[in-house]
Image (tube, rainbow, N blue to C red; front, side, top):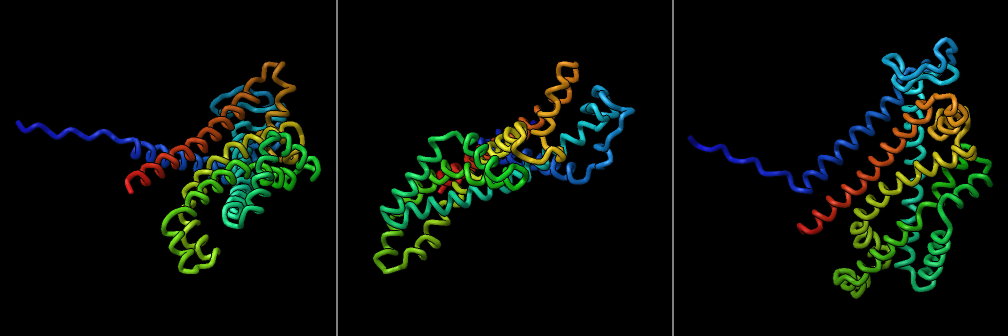
Length: 280
């Protein structure tokens, strides 16, 4: 008998790609579910209030009879939307400042480095609360707050990466040939920092989502009329002593799972990027 060939085990790059696809698919399912769920399930229905988890209401109902599964999924979709806007804004601020610091001379580098150190010396959440409070809270306040507070770490990484690329031989050759600085930045520097930019962008997501939920929890974020996770957790605190544990348990657990998924997407992107870089 001819022995069948053994299957080769998956290497870490294939595992990273597989996990990345699984996390992305799950998050897309959550978003689509939140968009297409029947909003009638979150209207007041006093006949079903305070119901524990069951087949009819997977996450139970609250004190107004609203389905907690529907509220949680819609709240997650809302948090992901705020996270997307905030992470995109912060990532592009980091890209602009990081490239400016590394390409526009010593004075620009000193000024931007001082600005990065200033923002990093204060916890994100404190600065975010101050900005959200100054702007009166709400969607505008929380989006502007997370956008203006989550860029420093990525800006520092991009600055270091750009300064390393500047010393490369192909950049030195372009400079000797008289190519302008903007041409070198667009043609040589930008393509090389796109992987770090994308990884940094994905790793900003978990911080933005958690900080949005925290600020909303204390009443300075999204409107109380929105089914945001922070609002749900804040409202449920007063009912936990009555034994209604499901009001906070399921929304909090789902928030942590989504945050962890975004964190893992960033980590697996980093692994794939390193594997591709080592191959080349």
